[in-house]
Image 1: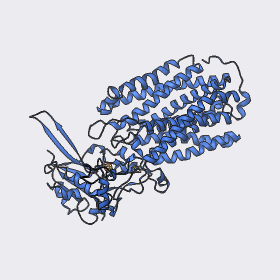
Image 2: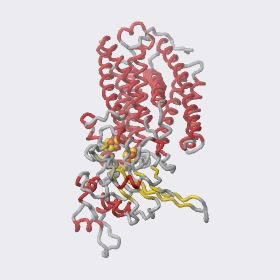
Image 3: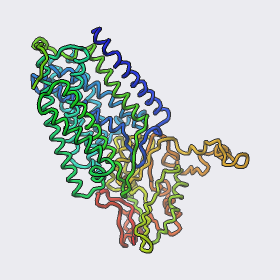
Image 4: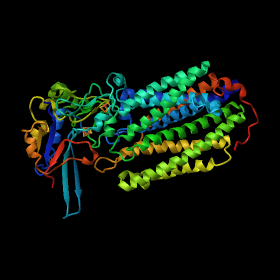
Length: 379
Length: 229
Ligand code: SF4
Ligand code: SF4
């Protein structure tokens, strides 16, 4: 433990500083209002929404991976279930805080309960995430106290919750008929797919780096599971590539202005360079064989960058084309970035706290079955 | 029977003077840059073959309003009594879901409290003209051209953190008056009538050629543009 804390100290300090700047920016926003944000009447949602979508999807993805072991009975996943579950909580709670910063009147959140609009996807998102967070916390509490039965029941609920919350989040965008980059039933499904991809990438990075920092050796079984997850991610990435291509093809057929933004306009360089090449093609090639832990980390990083930029293009790009053809612009401000960075730093700190306090590498009765062998390449 | 108000704008009468937009600002106490009544104007072609088009715009009070469906807390709602799409300033949480889903871009968000200009302590010419803050103090209202009538059924001046949009002067319609933009239009291009009343003049007006904006979206907009060129 002492070696662990000493090694982690610089990270804690850096994350602490970033978090402090983030909290300061949040306070500043509460005092000065959203004049500190880059959003406008033409582009009402800003990069906080992008970050929220990205982080909430990552959390749902990790929750799903944790249910592979807990609910669906894939035994080999049991050894990462607990870490995955805890990470989901560590990411989701700061994500929700980031989201609330974009509400003009957070003090009126009570109207979600007293004046619900059951037609509004945003209401459903609020409701499902509200319930989902509570059940996630309960599930982790049950894992911690060794209540296997409660874990099982809770994990069924969080499994449904993760899929529902993620697709409803997609539904907020998918129901907007006027925005071609959003509209249609494919987007909620793509959000679920993105959730799995983002979640797996985050989990792989967190797991491998945790072992690196604590200088503990990864069991062969763990390496095997990670390698397996890497392979699964590569397959899911190929499906994501298919989604992107079909989206472009359909946009091409309707001659949408949004098509130009992606194909060869304002966002084309980041779309082709970051989302497609760096975020999908390169990781797929990397993950084809020899999935060593460090390779998983690097591929995972590329995937996360690609996924973030993808959500940026969807959420922001979707708002740029104005009703009568004009194209607006949007630039994120320092305050927005600081709040996002603060949220991510919060997640890192919550996770590190968990690593220290809750022995995330083990899970209940599976402990003794974990055999320690020398780390080697898992193919 | 409940009413269902709709507006007609005769594009061949409209002279593109934007008096409607100015009148709206007076009536509804909107700040600079916040336009419930707006316009699209497009110039196409090169001289001498130029076409200039001016279309006054406002909230279409859509019968199938995406903004109403998107609002999580029913702050944006359809009023059963008059068929208008109205905003409840007291309930709005400022999530901007309505803005993201309105296909016409007619909803504005208050990033800050409006009319800050009137707190300014600097005059245009020192010792010659009064400062905005002095004028405001002298007149004793929120803004010098403040219209208290707007407070009849909506926040007279909205505030930071919520959205706002055209309410079709529901406070005036309530007492049998036309919206202010309608009564101030020098070309008498506008009219608001009740679609549910078969004797209303609006049915006669709608016998002219007419269109609505982005009809293809299925929003059933209720601002009808008559006789476009
Ligand atoms: S024009 Fe926009 S704000 Fe007005 S009712 Fe239609 S969708 Fe709502
Ligand atoms: S900004 Fe206000 S009116 Fe618009 S959807 Fe949100 S709560 Fe409703």
